[in-house]
Every structure is written in structure tokens, then in C-alpha cells.
Image 1 (cartoon, rainbow, N blue to C red):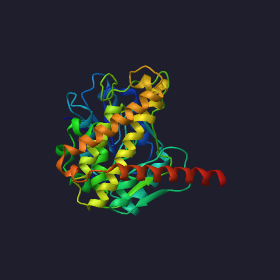
Image 2: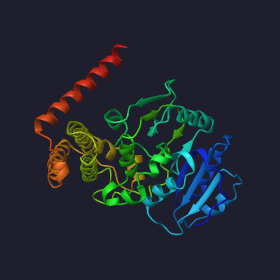
Image 3: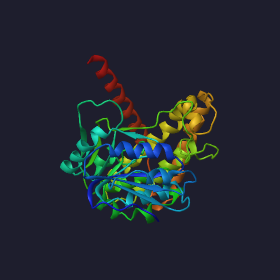
Length: 350
């Protein structure tokens, strides 16, 4: 491991895992460091890049920057987990090497974390609305709003001391279990320990997908269970549900959360998948060709998801005890549909 001189413990660490994106990661680090707040740091963990990432980062002279390397490529999940563990801040915030941040908003974000002390949360993207954040009490409210959200990774934040207490490098390093969503398992558990937050100020910006945007290193649709495919969504909904079945909450809360995961997975594996395959920019990013998904295929995927989800729960003893009935699912789906219609009507009448 190599690293620059470490800054003293600080309030907020921006943690950037990187691989072979020397120009974008250098620009991103410089952008964060445009904020002159002395109580922040930037931690970069290079995953064995073969380009000039390390030399470019070495050219940045700022004591708030710490650069580490794995020496060789240890995989996406390893890099994400370990860059968070290298943070010295009271809070650590993940930032992907292809995304961006507004340095003018960093100090306000740090102040929000110091004042409200959420255990975990994520930042929404888009224009600021004047509404700083939503806070959810520990337990079911936080779990339903923040846990298992599968949000874009940039802007996920954690209270570092609580995060280290989860032993994340050991418990969430199995890609077959956590897929591309280790952060969501971590947020679920931290949502039981303290309040969770969704921060609404315009701070982070994901990479804009264009015809010239770099393709994903971590995802390739050549795999049948790529995370956005119906099989991938089924796998994650099942694994999230198995995780829920082991949380220290009561049975009714577990059933409610597992129902949420069923509905989330069903929608993303059918309608979500159909929309994705119609989007040329997204398909190019994930190395696949666009195509039209017809109604017959969508209905077939829905049936397959339902059967696979129920079978997945039945093979896991704790999850089997939380088995869902068709009636429970139908009622939850109906209630969601009514809620969505009510919100749409309210917006129309506003």
C-alpha cells in the first residue's frame, strides 16, 4: 500500500474507489478539494489501475488527500468496502470516480450531518428544492425509506463508527450474495441503530450518459444475471428478503419489508427492464443492444419472478417463516396502486 501523508481525524471523508479512470478521478478529486473546508478529506483507493491514475493523483498537493492502492485488481466490491474503511472522518461518503460533486455545497452537507447525526442515508440528485432533507426514525420508518433502496452509489453516507461496527469487509464481500448492492445491506442494518436521512440539496451529479460516455467496468449484460436483468432483480429481491428475515425486528415488520422487496423486484424486473432495453444510451453503457420487450415477455417475466421469489424464500428457513400469501401480495399491490393514483391526482389538482 502507498499513501500520501494522512490528515488528522476529520468530520467528513469523501471516499473514491477507482480503476483506470485517471482523467476523471483526478478532475473529481480537484473538484472536491476546491472546497476550502479544512474539516474534510478525500480518500482514494486505486484498484490496480494500469493507466496513469497514481501519477496524476500524486501531482495534487493537498494534505487533505490520501491515496492508497490495492496493487492489483481485487474486484469492485472489495474496493468499495475498503475505501470506506480507510476513512478517518466521523462520516464517510462514497463518490464514484466517474461522477461529480458541487464543492460549494460540501460545507452545508457536513454541517447537516454534524447537526442531525443520522446513522446513514443517501443524497438525491437534481435541482435543490429548498427542502434540505427528510429524516426517518430508527427502525421500520428508516428501513422502508432508506434500506434496500438500490439508489445510485454516489452520495451514500454512513456514520463511520457505526459502519466499522458492522464488520463490512467480512460480512458483505460475497458478490454472489450482495451483488452490486452491498451498501444497501449496510444501510438496512444501520437504519436499526439510528435515524436515516435522504438529503435533497443538489450536491452530487451522476455521470451523464452520452454516446461517448465510458462503458461500465463493473457490469456487463453478457451475464444472464446482470443486476438489471429479470434474473438479477429476482436474485437481489430474494437475498434482501433473506437478510430481512434475520434482522432483530418483529415478524410483522419483516413481512412488511419482504412484501416491499417483492413489489420492488417485480416492477424493476418487468416494467423497469422493458424501459431499460428501450434506452440506447443505457444499453450502450452496459454493453448490450436495444430491443423491444413485448407484453407476452413482460407477463412471462412477472410469472417467473413470482415463482422464483416464493421458491427462494421456501429454501431459507428464517425467510420461510415469513412466507407471503397471495392475498397479502395482492392487497399490498392494490394499496400501492391506489397511493400512486392519489399522488398523481393531488399533483394535477395542485
